[in-house]
Length: 272
Image (cartoon, rainbow, N blue to C red; front, side):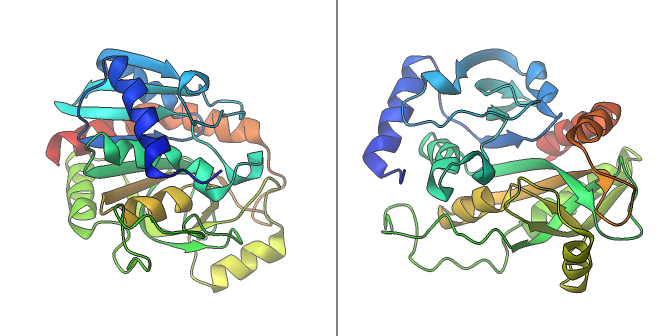
């Protein structure tokens, strides 16, 4: 599935008929972090299954809803649960919502995820501001015909995560006394967790955290000229750094730190 601009406009037309207006910020909420959407004022909700050309989220902890409204005095369009490559989606399909956000006027994207800590100084429950990423998923969302109206054939990824936004995020975190790490996120395809050897490789390559999402959405956002801010919740230590890994721990950790995470995102939105 490769979304062209006509298909994207059909999605946008449907959402506008539901009452969704222009958007300032798109937000993508990862595993266990979806409750932030409950804080949206005057929400308009659409299930992914109802939106033309949208895939469906199948992961536990992902509600599968697109929510429009006001958050921290900004008009937002929030993905409560994302799509993943390991679910069988094409790279182009799982980035459809980012295209739709941009067509609805969003100038910026905030992405969140649950990640495994690779940096030996990290601890479960910490938040990490994404400084840069490594695409180790074995595929790329821009493969195929380029939509010139959306962006260039060869987008520059030198500043994939907006430096000014990161500065604001660090200032907000310091003011709120929320500890915020900063590092490199490395995306694997999943759905298995990485092996200890793969984690040693990731650390040698400069990764501070690993996960199975985010990078395709960020690539597409940059392709369309959107400014991006990314935050990872370090839910566990990666393979070889603790006894075993499971999704229940991911959800438990995000539930434990969700209030600090929500407070940080709300304050950042307010400041941007």
